[in-house]
Structure formats: structure tokens, C-alpha cells
Image: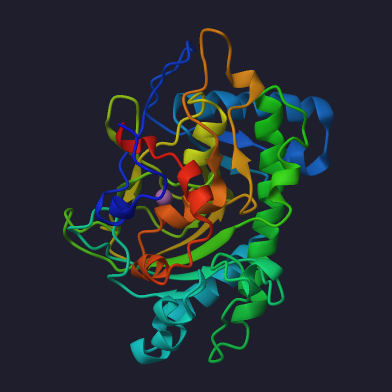
Length: 361
Ligand code: OGA
Ligand code: NI
């Protein structure tokens, strides 16, 4: 059953999972996550990029998760952001609350423990800090779009802004390189996605998962990501990924790599060829767990429509066109996002009607 465009009940529903594998492709049943060398995308070597794109395509079909190595990001850029994340989450609660996202009312700042849950009945055991493109004078922001605008930076940490935003920019550049590889793997021109990511709703979320002894205490409950894809760095084990048999397999940190996973927008773009795979975090590692999760969003006004290489007379599009910005606003499980709706600032009602929520069909 299709729900009407903007779904008010979304806030009370778990971000549950669509897994329609109805294109006739072979999908391998994996017990571990492939590691892919993406050096060719840094050097621009054309033959190497095609081979890499093939490997990525296969991983996206089989499990929707892969590690990237030789990605071109220097260790000190990663260490710098990690250190600032540690320092920020170590600040006293009342200091962190100066940057509370619920006060800022746009997608920037501190997300306290208890603000987020993949399942409305259980709160996730994590706190976060949201960073996006630094766009203080952006016309969309000035017109009330809460996904753009300036960042907030903690005054208490003089190097936070420099180090966190340097990481943001470098990972965004890696994101552009990965978009090229996805395009090639999908039989599209290398720069196919480029016009959709000129002002991306890219979000870097610094996350702290306190350690817990309970397997029941989820750092983040089972969910899929809703942007095209995510690039994740982590200091400790705890991330688990559901394979095709429904088993949870570990995705521990591997030195020199990032984890990349497909989200709902790429699943839709590819007509279910690439899978947006459920994953969760349980931090029983015995230490504080930090992750740097970069969600590679598109431009707000991007309409995600089945790629021509992912459809045929036997495989018509599984989804109608999706307005990426409204989908993103709809999918936020943060309390502050619901308040946007109460304030009536969720953009144009006609556009809302174009959002299709097939998650529960
Ligand atoms: C997420 C997520 C995993 C992690 O924030 O969507 O899946 O390891 N994070 O932090
Ligand atoms: Ni996720």
C-alpha cells in the first residue's frame, strides 16, 4: 500500500527495510565484506577505474557493503578528526548542550543521547555531532531549508573546526570519486552523477558509542541508510551487517580503509540492483567507540529516477521518481525534525506528494 506523500507516521515507525531482489542477477552469499583497492580513482587511470568499478558493482549487488583501501586520504587527516571527536564528547554535558541540534533547528550540531532511535521503543546508546557544507549565505538556507546553512563550531576546542572540516572536505572528494566508480559500474558515463552533487546534502556525523556490557543495548538499531551511500571510519569493532541469509556479520575496522555502504537512494536509482543493506552497532568492545560517518547526500532538489541501464521491458522501474531533499527530511528520526513539520516549514506540499514511501508496501 502506498502512503500519501509526506508521511507523518514516519516518526513512529522503525526505519525498516526494503529488500526486493527482483532483477535477474546472480547474487553471491557472502560471509565477509570485500576489500577493494580504489587507487585507480585517485590516479585517474582509465583501465584501472573500469576494473575497480566492476569489483564495486559486484560488492553492491552481493551485499551492499565494501571496504576501500588506497583511497587517497592521509592518516593525519583522519587522526585529526578522530581526536576532535574524542575531545568534543569528553566536554561536560552542559557545554555540549550549547550546541544542541534541537535548539539550532537545522541539521547541524550536537545530538544528545536519547535523541535518536531506529526503533521508537528503544533509544540508541550514542551521541553525535552533525557537520554539513559550510553555507552561511546560501539562498535555500535563507529561504528556510533546514538541511543547508552554516555549521556550529564548539568555541571550547580551537582546532575542532579546522580538523573536522578538513576531514569533511577530503571525504567529500572521496565521495565524488566513488560516485564516478558507481557510474562506471552501472554502465553510465563517469560524470553521470556530477550534476546532482554540486551542492550536496552531505552530512558528517561524529558519533560516540559508550561501551556497554549488554548485547541488548544497541548503539544504533537495525536500519538502512537513506542517502545514496555512506563512508565510515571507526576506531573499534561493533558494526554488524546483515548478509543475504539474515545473519549478522562483523565489519570491524581494518587499518588503512573506510567502510562504504549503499543507502536507499542508490538502491532506488539502480532499481534494486544495488542493495541498501541493514546494519547495526553494538559496542561491547570494552572501550569507547567513535565513528566518523559521512552520508553522501545529493543536492536537495535532485530527483532520483531509475537509471536507464537498470531497467528493461522485463524489469520496469520499482519506484516512482523520488525527491531526494524531501525524502531526507522525511527520514530523519530526530525529534527536532518533527518540529519542522509542526512549524509547517517542510517546503512545498506538491513536492511532498511526490515522495513515495514504498517501505511498507
Ligand atoms: C549510521 C551508522 C555505523 C557506525 O549512523 O547510520 O550505521 O559504526 N553508523 O557508527
Ligand atoms: Ni547506518
